[in-house]
Length: 479
Image (cartoon, rainbow, N blue to C red; front, side):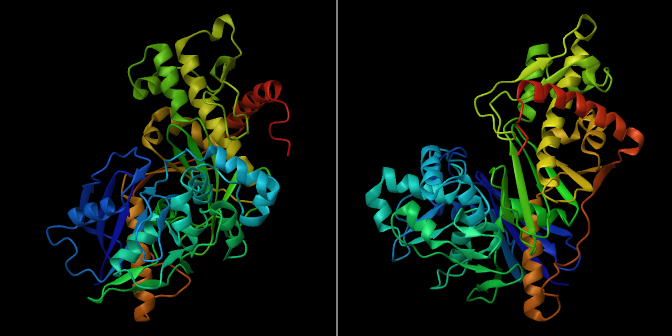
């Protein structure tokens, strides 16, 4: 039996899982908070190392043969020629680069030019926009930037003792805004467009390649971003999609090729297994449920769910367009939410509660359709987030999505994916694993919900929703 570890360095903490290489069974775990405010937009990357060291105390890594690293996406660690940080790392939740992103879109000739170049249109969170922001707000620091890494790149480099070779993986590279998943190559001209000059970029490794060996003989795999690591930890394959229910939402699916979307609704991520993870985001998901709960004076989402189940599909004609913070999909940044279909018989708390759940799920189904219209097959939907456990979500989602819905047991899937990557790279290095297929680990425990004969009901709910959406926002999905 071999032993590997997966390390997930998120925005606020480090989690480590130590797993059996053959089955993926978790043998032991470690955790430590980062010694920084989780919502900070700039962080000394040494804080990540301090957290890692704390999480790995007590002999946690004893006997481990390989480590995989997952970390927060879209961060930028700018280094000078000697490898020292030019300034604090800009982390993924930093949205100060909105104007910089808009500048970049215009500078290259529009959204379609970006979609064709790198499969995505610049957003404030992406490294390419952060580099533009840095060049505009701190030009002296920007001039000193010689190397650009992301958080997982930097952690891998540190674990290996800061070698001359710096690496990343295709999943992490695909989120930068200057690497094309379609061609598998960098666009250095886009780095220069953003930063004002060229900078060295890490070598992009294949899914099962090792970044290197530590002096102690510990193999370090390529590492990846949290989204890609979680997909690997869940064991996603072709036909699978993930719907994430946070305050905002997202739909991500496994696809065999990169997608270029001139509308910019789809972000063409690569994954950590050799395929692709196109993602579509919505600005509103659980925030619509929380707003409805406050409006109705309901104490919790669990109570809102119970109230919604007293209604029936279609919510007695009530339709809630949950665009409370504007919307990304469809692109309606300045719109507001809408409640329509009010009649005397529909003006009851249970119908409004039901309309909130159906509106949230229909909005996410709209996002899923963006992928389906581009040839992405969706046969199974993984629901993630605390709201995935609500009975009202589980009752309505299979029919509205028109697919089997699974709700995995809560687990550290990003850390598990990092560990699985480590096991894969270790097996390839030892000659015991295929380079194109990750190790088959035990599936996560999950609840499964089938649409059964309820698909026509779900279609009717969606038609009611779409009629309201198209009346208020004609042409929102015509391209």
